[in-house]
Length: 257
Ligand code: CO8
Image 1 (cartoon, rainbow, N blue to C red):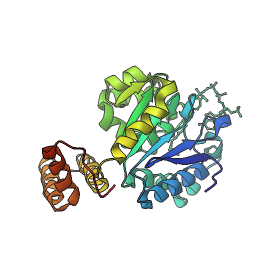
Image 2 (image 1 turned 30 degrees about the horizontal axis):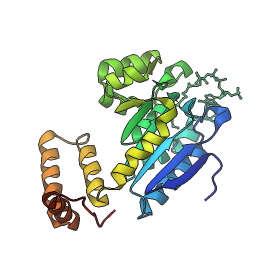
Image 3 (image 1 turned 180 degrees about the vertical axis):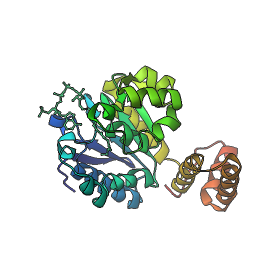
């Protein structure tokens, strides 16, 4: 499938989406997001894909929503057109998605990274919610997801001043899972995704669902949800195989991957 603003390829059970608007530092125009959603939907349906990586360039993951596209938008355009809502499909995807972020991840770029399941950062990554400098506020989760990642004080600091944080600060405060040299980022992200894709797909998907549930519910309800899913895993062939392989001291051959 040929896209205008993204590149896609598959590597050993992993779907790799590369944002590709280099002249605009991968600014996230509506067409780009529609393409990302379509590619993700395709990977979600493709039984050979076990995990996805979204990345940009070494200079920019994405420098935000496309300011040129937004600058003449009216309230009615935004409201009636339900601006940004199509982005929800990224977070709703059922397969694991890793954001591999090098360079700028600003505004909608930072928000897109946070819609993924975890973020691997290149050592040159810079995260920020600079919408305040444009006379608006974050609109795709920056005031909500960022607060859950880094806590109120830092989220307020980022959203109210528009300052950027570097990769080390982002790792320290839990926004990113780990930092790798920017030049190795995509390889490392794909390797990580391949490791996930090698496990049982339904178990991976249930694990993602369970971790995500912790954001949406009380501890008690979340624990019950986790327990029910955990019990259900004993109805899968992959649980039998995984545990038998451990006992037999061999590598498991998961059927559902
Ligand atoms: N939108 C459109 N074009 C952009 C954007 C953007 N967000 N960012 C950079 N560009 C363009 C520039 O206009 C420039 O184009 P041209 O060569 O035609 O003038 C080209 O990319 C290169 O940019 P710079 O020359 O500015 O490059 P620098 O290396 O000097 O600076 C920066 C890099 C610091 C990243 C700078 O480009 C910048 O500040 N960009 C804007 C960052 C920003 O404010 N982002 C937030 C946007 S608002 C937003 O994301 C709202 C989210 C709401 C929901 C999102 C859902 C989509």
